[in-house]
Image (tube, rainbow, N blue to C red; front, side, top):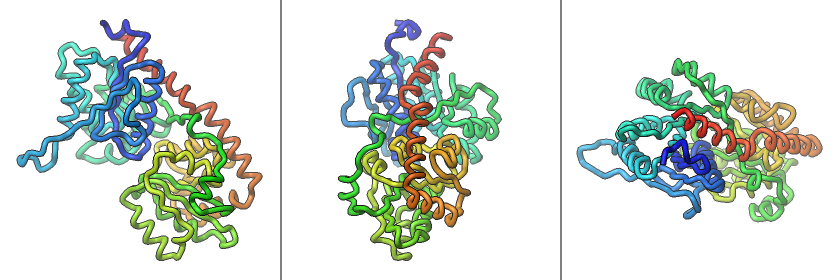
Length: 383
């Protein structure tokens, strides 16, 4: 059956990393939403993505394994991924292969399609941030990423800021579709957090939450710097959600500054929405963010955000309306911002409510799903 003729049901492949970061979360949630709409979805990754349950109707996971061979100093994951993509593309006649994070997924998709004579599968590449801003500036990857973008049928960026970065860094002059990250408001919503707070042992204390993959660019150490600048009478507690290379440094800093009893190290958890909704303030001091999925999730729960004024974050958090933005690394200003929200409950409540309304209007799952479906069908109509 011709791909363009199957307008009632799309066959979509999604390639992503399985880690706790935003690109994998977005890709997985998109796949689940497409499946819920009756589309056939195939997910490609080297492990089960963190938000993909063991079984979900309409979603098939294709894990990529790499053989250990003495000749290879580095296992050739990209070639193994291309092989799996090619097999599924051919067997299931995929309409669209949507790859999230350019390296190596965009190139793998291109190679897989080249291996199939007269292949009609459309390739969509979504840039999520560091695949442009970090890897794009690396001589080892820049030219390859540019090739992947130029050989995609559509390029998507998650913010206007990232779209401009993609043009500037790669000299890319093709069309860029800006599709912001989204949040499932049936999951991330305002709720009673008393049970969660009791479980965390915070009681009536003020609770600050930070979620990240604890890479250096998230500046997670600043969470401890801000916490120790808050006055003792606030009785503030800090919940840290996630894992990554800087987590041990954060633990050391908490011990060094004597605030261990104020910090809850929660690691990677499945029901992160329960923790977020129980917080009074969400804090994100990143030095670079192409969008900011975690701040968006917090706002969907009616939690005001304090974050860095950087990258795409001003497109997510409206300063003075849904949260407060300060300059990267200015922990004194950030501590003052956090304190102001923890001490002015009326202002914090108003910001949280404004954040909920804005998320519902601009960043809902339904809106994003409609944009993606429209893009896919537009590409197929041009076959």
